[in-house]
Length: 455
Image 1 (cartoon, rainbow, N blue to C red):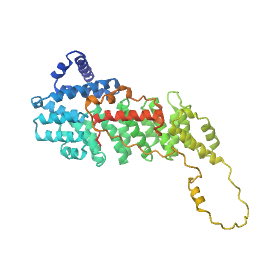
Image 2: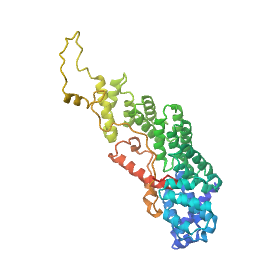
Image 3: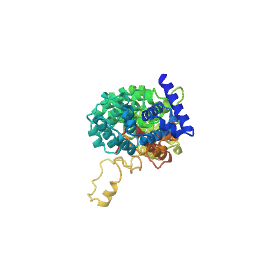
Image 4: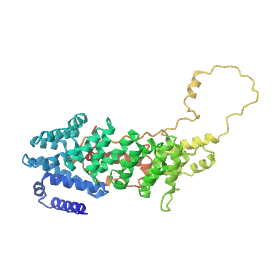
């Protein structure tokens, strides 16, 4: 309660300062550490689901950048201001501002080495950043600085040293619980656990994320990693555990997650998982079923398209409203109907008892070539009906100056839970899918403030 009250008071004062004619004077009188701390408080509110705080984040980044550009050696004699400079940099700050401010600061060798690592990180030199930051233990630093350093180091090591990265992300969570740092650390832990094949870690991190940060504007990135993880680790995660995690979501998010799992599982031939996820998507909660959702009907049909109830499947496929499907799902519907038709089609000829031996005639090569254009089932290839691969965790672009990142902090880009394109991420020529792609690109830009490793 005290923390929330402090946050509200600080944000209120900043709003008053920026609204009055003497906003520039008010900004100059604030110390860098005060501005950076205010930025962290706003980011914590965003992590908790307060999307309306995102414009304030953009304004605070702009104010902090201007204050640090004007800071002199005297300002940085206060250790709190130098730590704030490093935190600002690891929050995705302007690398030009950070480098200029560090050149004016006199500090001890360890702090300067850390600053060098942060500058390398911001300028897209991950190898140099890792070498500069490697000997610095985040647990020996003040909490706010150590948490960001652990997050950055964990992000940098995620590909080459995933086990060490998970340890660092655990330290980030320990040093900064209930913050945007913890939100980002949990989200990254989910993706790394998938690459490690660690189902227990994946389930724990997913449970913690859903419990604490389901309404974060970055939750769509968690959803991508979660769905890919369920597919990749489906042999190690029980359906009961999956149901436990999704039961903590609101009904709409749970339905969308199950639709995405059902689609991926059906395409990849995981009939049991697809049938389970489709049934859960159709079942709904609180008495509200989703049996009329064309996506749920399609994905459940895909898991039983070669079963003994093929006539029922064909009837169900025929009732699906194609106009409510994306281009990618319409291709899946076409493929499913073609397969169902082949299952019940009469044989092309009946075998003849004791057939007379036929003369051996060599087959012309062109006919052999023509036969090879069909698949093992005798069906022509269906455009768009391809297996989806697990999504790769998005990499943030090189950070831009705070005053140029306004589109990334626009609250209008936050995707509502009911967005239908979440369940149909196939063909980006579909208008809804294209909008989803654009939204994710914008969220990637915001995510650079959370310690994502630059390319």
